[in-house]
Image 1 (cartoon, rainbow, N blue to C red):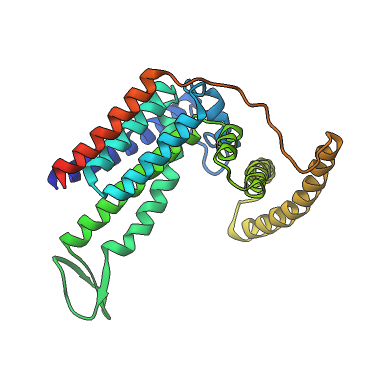
Image 2 (image 1 turned 45 degrees about the vertical axis):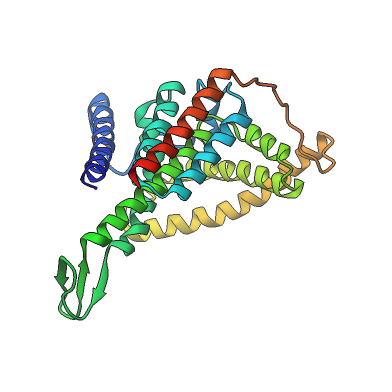
Length: 298
């Protein structure tokens, strides 16, 4: 248990270190630190941007999707903290070293799920009572907020398991374009309606994000967030404009699809990518290693 806690601390320290270095480098590169107005790192880019530039993009998509889903299932089924730590390290290695994704980009992407995981498990780690309980408690005049070593261990185990599962899925999404993932789902005989809705919704999310980014940058350049009252007014204006813009773009994109002979089927170019023997052998060996690790440490 102590080793797992040390690994967790090292992981979060590494995340903090790289995020701090990235911020420090950007601040000194520009000479000044801009507060409130400025370009946010990675703003306006979709996940497909990283997928298309990944060096493992040319791996067989069926192999990548199958591997990530299988590892996801193992993380949940085995329910072992050691397995989770190995999966996190292995998925980061594949994405950063093999895929040549910059470390700060990977950490920036993983920061969002980490925040949700920590907030979600916070309710597991603490509890409330009208009298002091557990090893650690805090009196807040009307009640006690307490926790215990058992609750902290449970929260850490859950964070590791969920983060490992997310790492497996991120390995897939950061190296496989959405069109190839949809191609794999089509081969798996997922209903056509679900596939097409998923594809159109996925594409449209990033279109709206791009529109929102431009509106927000335009508002910031005009001091639209200088105080709370102005920020509320700007937010309302952007929200109403987003509604109108989304309807206009939906109509124009549907017209563009009909102009290209859309008859209810979304057809994409599908490139045949062979699976190398070494990839299959490595994947099988890794799966066996995870199962053996679970057997020795359960």
